[in-house]
Length: 320
Ligand code: SF4
Image (cartoon, rainbow, N blue to C red; front, side):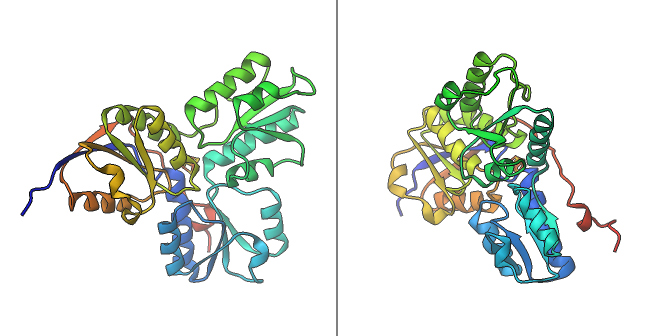
């Protein structure tokens, strides 16, 4: 039998599930345990097919909009990305039992935007158009109150009504480097702009990008476990590429791997976006182990111990 070639896998740490994703998945699981199926979920609870399929198999019903849900007493969960204000209003109007799984770090951005609005400021949101988190944040305030800035070119071109009465907030899952470039342009053009100290990018996005920055320069290729609609997974792939990884790809399952891309490599970095479960990281390592003699090392960029409690109605001490 031919011996397998050696391959060193360098695991990025932290990787995979963040506290907001754990809370969102637990919200659906707990609602199913307490109330039984169906539990309706507006939008993919987190951007991961494996997670969504698992919950669907247990009785979750995924919809894109509330008008797809019949009149029901069953719980209706809002996804981790947050929702525009008119969604909970509509749920209330239809007497739905709604459970909000919006990540508390997204809710924090909603609150910041509301405070700026109350103070009469013109608000800029740095983020990617059409991402559900951006749709949700824009939808916290009346139409026209928030303008979207996607690039440094947008920041350079923006013409405010009053440059001394501006504020900015950001999406939580952006590239740290791209965002600091955009913020630098805004601060340079509008020195009196109000905003967070740096940006609103969350701890999980920050730490996962930091780990990829450490690993990418020392490996021949990088796999990011994550979905193509997962903003933080896409950013991890970009970071790996920018840090010099010639092959940096997203994979949702081991079956997505194009083995020809990895021919001749001696080292492979492996990470996972905040919505990707560790079981898929293991599945991919197993697929490499069939072809290579593996050695495994972990490179860590940060320790994490964040925990977000479930929505109040689902906590064990909640009144019946
Ligand atoms: S990636 Fe960040 S903002 Fe998004 S759910 Fe996780 S902790 Fe919350």
